[in-house]
Image 1 (cartoon, rainbow, N blue to C red):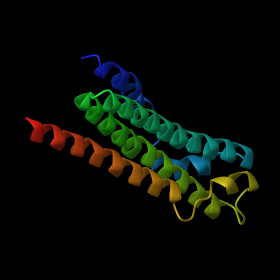
Image 2 (image 1 turned 90 degrees about the vertical axis):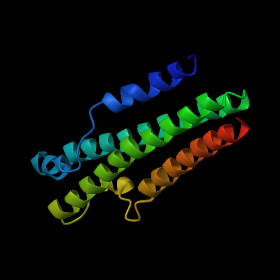
Image 3 (image 1 turned 180 degrees about the vertical axis):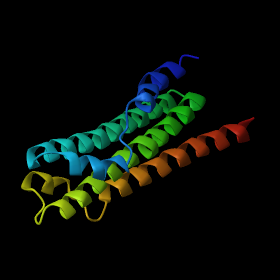
Image 4 (image 1 turned 30 degrees about the horizontal axis):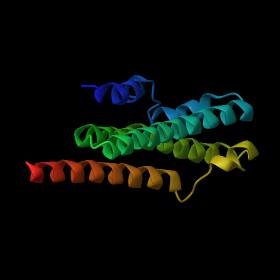
Amino acid sequence: MVYRRPVLLIALPLFFCHAVHAEDVPQTILSLPDEGAECRYVEALHQQAESAFASAQKLRDEGQAFETKGQSRAAAKTYLAAGMVAYKLGMNSASNVTAAIGQLKIKHPLLPACAVPFDDPTQQRVTDLSTFSIEMSNRSLAITQGREKVR
């Protein structure tokens, strides 16, 4: 049961934190009074995505530590949690950034300069998070299947 604590201490607070829903983002952008407020909002959305990805990477690192110690069950669960954090929180937050930038492009003739660094027309961050999530799920599955073969 020792392996559950680290995973739960990191993963559970993330699932219960307030996440902005994509449909709220355009309306929020429209309601903001000036470019400064819009940029702070986009930066906050970007920070949510980066925090989710960092948390997922930390869980991956913990999974690797468990795997190194031969604790395959703990490793598999931690990798699965890492994939879930990247998928549920990271991709939602990255999509919110994309929605906010899209709305800013509609609202302003030119994208405010402070928002340009967050413009990701290729949606590379969403792709990175998706790939990471799949890798973690596959790693968890491989460990689980390997453990079942040993039995």
